[in-house]
Amino acid sequence: MTRLTRYAACLGIIALTVPFQPQLAAAREQMAPVAPPARDEAAYPPGTLGICHLAPLAGRVAVDSSGNLLVLSDYCRSQHDQLDAQAEQFWQRFVANANAETMTFARTLDRQSVVTYSTTICPFLENGGTLSELRQLQADNHLPVAFEVAITLAAIHTYCPAYRSEIGR
Figure 1 (cartoon, one colour):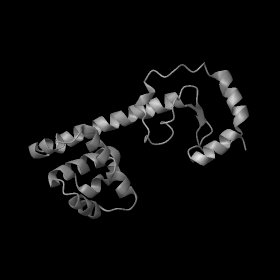
Figure 2 (spheres, helix red, strand yellow; figure 1 turned 90 degrees about the vertical axis):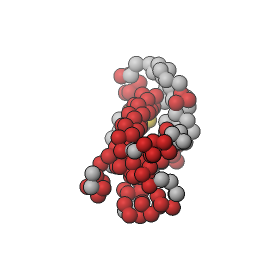
Figure 3 (cartoon, rainbow, N blue to C red; figure 1 turned 90 degrees about the horizontal axis):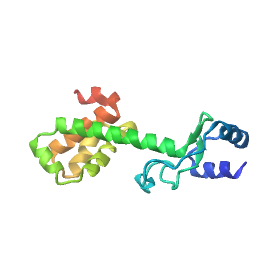
Figure 4 (cartoon, rainbow, N blue to C red; figure 1 turned 135 degrees about the horizontal axis):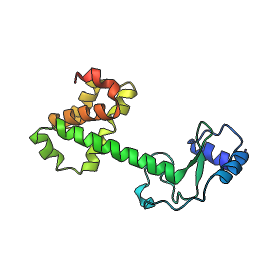
């Protein structure tokens, strides 16, 4: 087991299914030199899911579960862009579902906090939680009901559309 394989196994993030050294050598021949990322690496702060918080990313590669090499700076940039697009989509849906009172309350919070809160809805449902359990937990938060409803609707429509039938909208 190579040092990289042991490191990857410790992190639990990469499934290496083929010997790494021959694959890396072949990939080096095919790849152009890795340029520094166009974005500031601070865009991936500690707490970022997965491996994208490792800095610097330039020059680092990983092997995905299919045995393909991923240039981490490119991979993390695409993940970040996808998350930004989903957050914007959530926000537009939230605004569409929110009444004036809800928007007034939302303005007392920072937008990123609202978006972050929205990302907790689907994992709760996907891990076996029900909408009635979710509503009970939300009631315990003492947040305005209309705010919770707007977040739940927008989150389900954005992050886990398979649950749309359960909300009836």
